[in-house]
Length: 71
Image 1 (cartoon, rainbow, N blue to C red):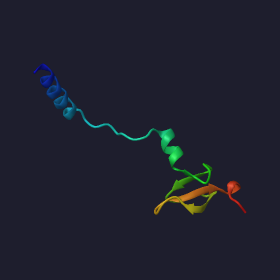
Image 2 (image 1 turned 30 degrees about the horizontal axis):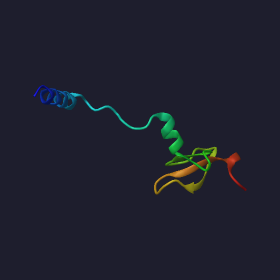
Image 3 (image 1 turned 90 degrees about the vertical axis):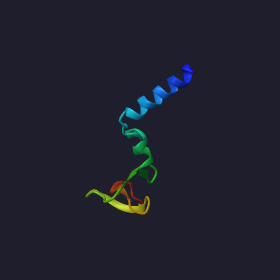
Image 4 (image 1 turned 30 degrees about the vertical axis):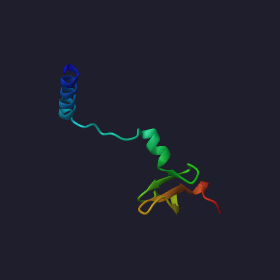
C-alpha cells in the first residue's frame, strides 16, 4: 500500500514539473546535420562562400565550401 502511494505521489509531482527542451546536444545535432563526408552542412540556404551540391532532404540543401567541392 505504501509503494502504491509513493508511485502516485511521484506521478503527481512529475506531472507538475514543466517540460524541459529535450533532444540531442549540440555535438550530436552537428554530426547528424552534416553531409558530403562531414565537410558540408545541411541548411535552408547556403552562405556566400558555399555552394549547393546535393540535397540533404526535401527542404534542406547540402552547403559545401568551394574548396571542398569536386571539379
